[in-house]
Image (cartoon, rainbow, N blue to C red; front, side, top):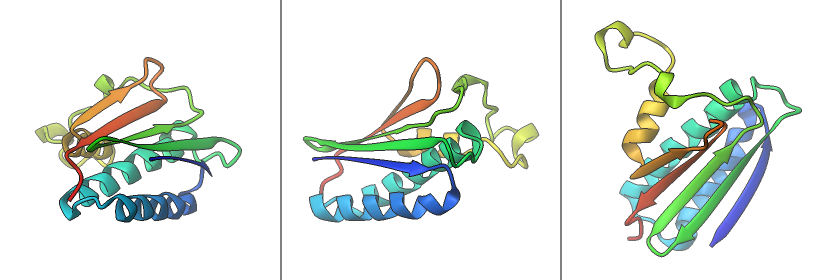
Length: 134
């Protein structure tokens, strides 16, 4: 199973991504536990791509790919922004960052996905979710 979505960089487009994930997970029979992890991680990644990567510029697009391979779902999110270095994002669990408004999405994604990889440029992330079928 493979699905590709291209959306404009506005938060209203998140509905399109949520619908695609709902349809995909229902179609292939993904467990409820996995569904929650997948939905939160994907929405965080797409939201980051829209707000931080493309700076909410509606002329810039976000590409989302969903690939089911055996019992794994891979979700890739790519924006048209300059990229970033994930290791420079402060840890939101440290006392000095506990009240910070940014940085939680990357933290959540890295803890909910079984594997997370960024491209060297830093404008694309691939999250892998293993053992997802009911």
